[in-house]
Image 1 (spheres, rainbow, N blue to C red):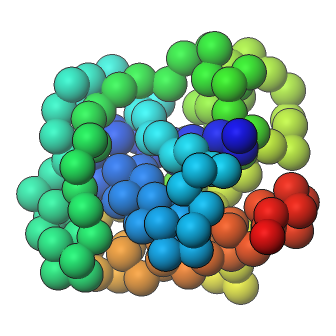
Image 2 (image 1 turned 120 degrees about the vertical axis):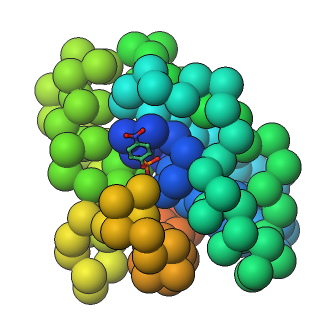
Length: 155
Ligand code: 4NP
């Protein structure tokens, strides 16, 4: 089993959106039995909370399930459990290193570094633009799946 974790600041806007999008992609590609997906926050602000209304609305618009999305905080143990730990922006990546106590590691990646965008995923909690964030995360999730396919010999 390959385990993928998406991480953002609050775990209510971007990382649950990525979790839902990537889970949907895995389902469509018949890979749900081979790859698991989860998401977590670097902060403790929204533990136990459902996603932001804007994230729920955009997922609904694109017919993507938002079942089982509950806020939780990243732990040290996550570093061992997950094969790919994907931050939404540079500060998330920095905080992932701080929380896990690990030095730079290739399994810790900023999502859009896998795409030609090469930038932070804008935080719609502040921008209000959930559509822009959805499109960028969608590109990132497709690139991540290609990377995993190549590295893990998935058929
Ligand atoms: P997220 O966005 O990291 O994409 O979930 C945020 C959610 C909540 C807060 C900030 C960013 N907050 O300040 O509560």
